[in-house]
Image (cartoon, rainbow, N blue to C red; front, side):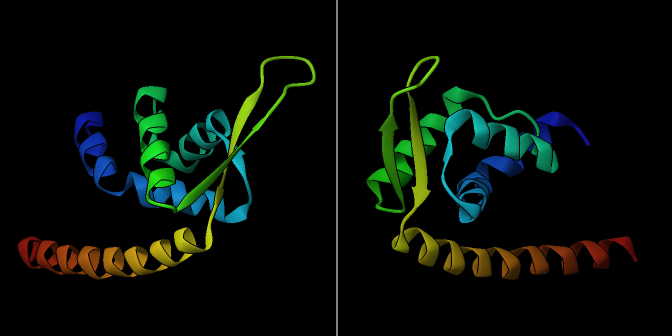
Length: 111
């Protein structure tokens, strides 16, 4: 699969992927980026991730907490709010419906 196409698809669902990554507990930005990469989604650069996290925070879906580092710089930790859990549940359901529709269309094309 071409990286360009994958990046286009990811832009449409990156917020859901980030919210989903936070369901197992709080993370700081680099941890989120690594988790997404380990899931096979590729590298999500800070210039993409941090503005997205700021939008999610502004929408009330993510809470933040700044913590001083014990042996290095401080880190901002992100956690899912109740609103974020609800938003993820709703939008994940919508995504499943949409991807199912696309899947059916592609099956018709492959026949």
